Length: 204
Ligand SMILES: Nc1ncnc2c1ncn2[C@@H]1O[C@H](COP(=O)(O)OP(=O)(O)O)[C@@H](O)[C@H]1O
Ligand SMILES: Nc1ncnc2c1ncn2[C@H]1C[C@H](O)[C@@H](COP(=O)(O)O)O1
Image 1 (cartoon, rainbow, N blue to C red):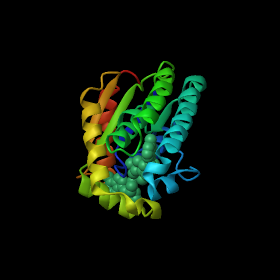
Image 2: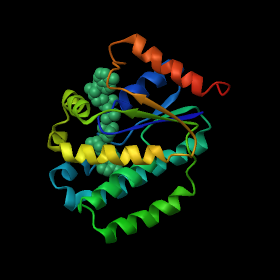
Image 3: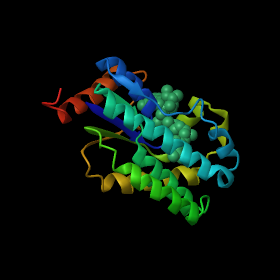
């Protein structure tokens, strides 16, 4: 079984991935954030570092794809490789922070890799509005994320909505998280578990 949690920055992916992994006793795969050699520089100067960061995330995410294929274990994954290309890289190109020459170069590598990627059995999209994303990013308190603008988050949210509305690769569960507190309220986490189990009925 392979479940992936998707959503904008601060939506709660890492928190939910951790809770689900503990609840089901499954392996969790997290994003390469704390040891990422480009992320801090990227937020200081997006235009300068966007290509290097995209290539780094693509490689790191592809390593996870390979591990999922080879391990045969039940895995819950925090963010997918699709988001790097269809959300982040595309948006950076739209915002002129990644040149079209570099974007096309990136996409040609991504298109090759895509042939080795299997969609998750279930994709869980955590949908959140921008003010709530801002609150959660602030609560998390990574210093270098203080420069993230409302405009950047809004554009990413638009990309997410577009991508999710045309996602047909596998089962999809959309959870509106703004009125849920699955950190403090066990009943809210229970609500999410019920939804997941209804989607995966028969696969457990
Ligand atoms: N539903 C929620 N209710 C309350 N706080 C939340 C919720 N989801 C996430 N948080 C908090 O918001 C912050 C960002 O969450 P995180 O899981 O790191 O988001 P993501 O991985 O999507 O960027 C963390 O401090 C987390 O504890
Ligand atoms: N592909 C990416 N391009 C730019 N930034 C990215 C990409 N993937 C993740 N990020 C950033 C966004 C956050 O600052 C951190 C961690 O993501 P999060 O959504 O908070 O788990 O990395």
